[in-house]
Amino acid sequence: MNSKDIIKLNNEMREQLSPENKEIYEDMLVYIRLNSNKSEQQTEELLYELLEHILQGQKIGKTPKDIFGDDLRKYCDEIIDEIPGEVKSTKLIFGSYIIIYYLGVTSTMYGVLGYALYHLFSIGTNTFTFSLGSGIVTIIIELLILYVFLTSVFKWLKNSVLKEKKINKWVEFIQIWVICMVFIGIIILIPIIMPSFGTEITIPIVLFAFTGVILFFVAYLLNKKYRITK
Amino acid sequence: MSRRSQLLKGVLEGCILAIINQQPTYGYELSVKLLEFGLSDVSEGSIYPILLRLQKEELIKGTMQKSEFGPKRKYYHLTDLGQEALAEFTHQWNSIKTPVDSILTKGGEKE
Image 1 (cartoon, rainbow over the protein chains, first blue to last red):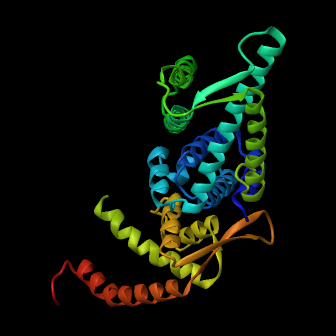
Image 2: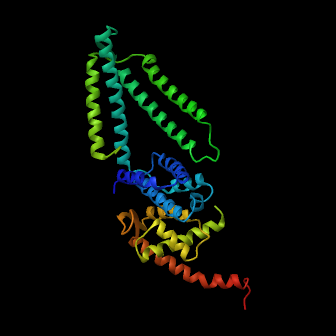
């Protein structure tokens, strides 16, 4: 059984939990799932087992704390320690998927916006000139920042669950808002401050949109073949 | 890690191997069986880290299977390596069980 099928099963079964148990279980689920370098298959099989155990306990009036001990965070840490790491090839496919998808989004947006601005409002130019060297360096740096962004969001999310004291929703919102703003700011800033070097190339802006669509299609095929998100 | 839980962990591993050896077992069922045997001092959840470790060490293997009643479950069975480990545990346990028992009951004094 593939991990995506187990996730589906988990989603259905979870509805049988009482509201209190559901809240606790979903916290545990987020906390355990957000460890990106752990085997997804093993993680999902385990989460499914924990769910069944809570459901069975629920029938005889046991709470998750009766089953897993009072310190759920500590219990989850203990479990995460024992989950084997993800297979290298799976990591590689997932990484490529994220990169291709990200480049697809950026390139399509850039192409469509640039094209629309020029043809509808006569703003900007119909072509785009960039230097090959700085272009490549910019893309690499942006991908690295994307990586840092995703890991920090994961860390932040992981830290926000399984707390004895609930934090104010507004404080949480502002924290994640700041993380996102800093990310977007840096992403926009880098191409601006990057000095240009390498061969200059001029291409019609609409080519960006084409490239983007092709990248999307590649990402779609990858996803279909390896079941990355569904 | 306290001394108590270290001892318990090793013993629990052996017991889990022995129960799975009887017949393929899933997580919740395993915890019920341990309780029925009187191991009520162990928190139920402590079997899952152990099951994960035993899988990593390839002593047991889990497969998602349809159960007769109810939903799909992950059933564990022993591998050949697991059989060996169980035999070794049984042997070691048998060789220390009686001496440890008599030391504890007689306070270490020889008759």
